[in-house]
Length: 132
Picture (cartoon, rainbow, N blue to C red):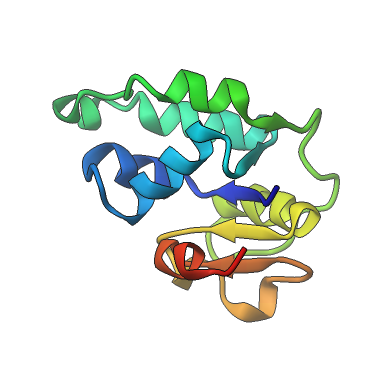
């Protein structure tokens, strides 16, 4: 089974745009077709963002969040060494992705190829088109 780190923007987009690429990824995870991997830092970021008041008009947090995150593979700690990234809050996502191998994000500009290390970084569309 493919293991993947999801940037928080994937969860936000999935909740706002039912049926879109991000929602298809979340639905695949909820069906058990892919395995989401989180660390304490990623989990904190997901929960912080999904509970922000600016998203209440969209009915946040979505009902599936708790199930998605409880079914995720939870690493016991964030990576000891975090890579540099243009946005410091993205470092933990890339650090875990370097362990897991794959990060899906809607903000590719935050992850220039030269910082990927051992990870692959893909857009939601590229991930959905990725052969199994």
